[in-house]
Length: 551
Image 1 (cartoon, rainbow, N blue to C red):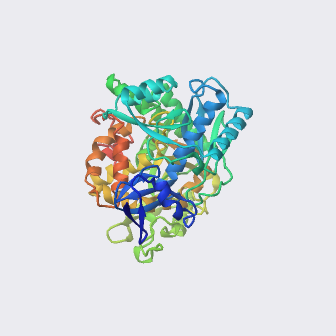
Image 2 (image 1 turned 90 degrees about the horizontal axis):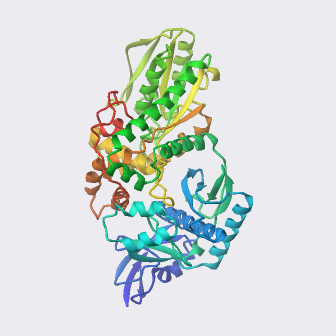
């Protein structure tokens, strides 16, 4: 017998008992949300068995790791249901593309159409699978056997991925004869996935899942046309370059094609920035280009590149950072923990900003402020600005799209841009890379280089950063005139060499270790590339260094 210490209690369990059995008495008091456990600090799937005395803690559906487990398991059940409906996994190929709100968009890759009857059939089959509570088993396969297995199912993306795997084996998950590979943890059976819906969306499927904050509730799906269009454009670029997955990218690296891939990707982005500048120049009366986006989206580099393109149309852009309108630190609002809340709208002197912008719009000369981040005081140093007929302001800040930020300015005088780093390259067809992972790695590399901030510190503060984005940025993204995706198809291979050493510096006994380990495992799929031949105006330069812009 083993002694397990759970929540201040000691529980006896026979060696070989699954953790699913061990935690069964605790599921009711935790609303059935227990997704995983930690055994002496190590994350364990519920299918794992007790091997000895241990300290046990729960990971719930409302935790990030628990919610990802739900999403991953639901995706596998979807793929199993699709294969069953089609009758042949080779003909039932589909690709998990990206997340739109609470829904995962899955495109059609095989010889079928995602019409109403197909969508209804897949949803019905999913419900049959989850109601049956079928076991989800995990088995370690030698790499060559795994390649043979997935090739027989038409999953060539996984075959390419495993070409670059350093270990000699791979874990394969199975549901009733259907086999798949997933990056991360899974539930022990299909019955854990209770809440979902399969909907039609843009010639494909939408797998609607609960938000982790309300894991027992499906919210009404809200289509986000502009977000989808931005993601679709970047996906089309990936197809154009024959780089849809990490395996494809690694193949291009090994073939010596990366210099061309980088130049093509940068040219595609530059063309898009040029198109946006053309739209701005053609719209009569625009004086304020409002740019907003989440952390590490590349706002600064984008604003400089856009300014250059605006100059080609005879305009004279002037950059303005909303950060210069911060209120003095002595009156900055604080959050629930008593820390300064620099990301709330009240941290900005909105009234003064609007007064200054209206004066500029009226042709008056205005002395522009500069915020001193060391003293926490807004300063005036004689820097004046007056708008001439060809002048245009390029305003950048997290509240740029919030109507309250520019309440006094005429709508026709504003052109609004939302910029984000929306990752579209996937590990393989069924394993997407979360957009937040790419931005977290960008910020980690940049902050270590420019501020000496450790990877531990960046991971530590990331939840608060995300919270601020959810409250102050994302609610306004569809109000933009245009969205720009700053992701570069090659960037994770470039960031790898900078991110890995600082992630390895996080010790096993530190709370941030799990996240560091997850990111290291994720980066392990990529081959690394040097950054020597990145263009000096690349958005990637904002993070790895060497930019020609003051970033």
